[in-house]
Length: 411
Image (cartoon, rainbow, N blue to C red; front, side):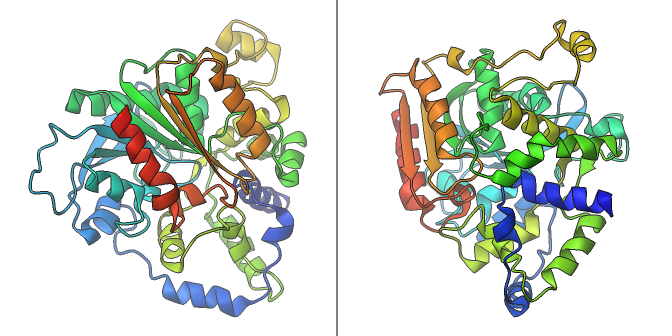
């Protein structure tokens, strides 16, 4: 039972949920009503089949192998369904990278007029959609199985060092053009880490940071702070867990019992990160494609950011192990103030975001603005947006995506 409680707490913790809200469900019939309307996708593992093809969009699937052997799924929507000119020669390429415990389907969750992936294709862009290691379509490796603990020995360090450059280079090689980059949540941390080491600058044209996470020490989530300071994720790793699957059998069994209580409203688990502007169809699509697995070590690394206040490489726990990996007793920091000012940045954040909250985001902004002038950085603040609203809210096309397309056209 102790292990089960650790896992369930981690589900709540790393999605940035507020525990009081998560346990405030009042009507089980509403849960049943949502479930009845959310039919499972006929192709739950293929974004191209389940989302793009449904709306008539061409969609190509590629396999990209990282330097450390992970085989990633990379999707491409080269143009819209009604374009008379299907050539990609005049279409600027853009790569979208998802956040934590989801995959690339998050960019096409809703209708063509509301989903960023479709909107970009309809506006003349060549759209590439990444899927990080461990997600449903990127679970293969040249020598390891997902049942091997070694498969899961990675954090966002490796996502930034291997997954991100692999898919960016692949898109660059196929198009011959520098890439506009869009990251959400963890996808922003990866590109910031790479830029801070002056990597990928030769293949990236501009960067969009949707509710970025970097500095996390001032998060508004009391549960997130508490879990980090009692080393909850580390305990799960010590107990022998390497893959964290938030919809695995143990988590499913406990959540089923919790949600069966008429006094508990499990919909609040979702509304805690997206409580502004969702509709039922988008929520249903989310349930068909998320949440997905990540590594426990990745959660440990994120906990370290909360405790330590800065942005550093993975801490192996003691000076001896750190010396073995870094030749120094402490993990080296990512110096975000060293990010060059010639890369245009478009940054958005929300007032109701408990993960990428306002004080930490403003800290990041102050760090970036030291080097960027007003022509190369653009910031949009939406007071009532939470963490997931930037990719799934019904009014995001007007508030976020329209200005983003204009930003790309200027750069």
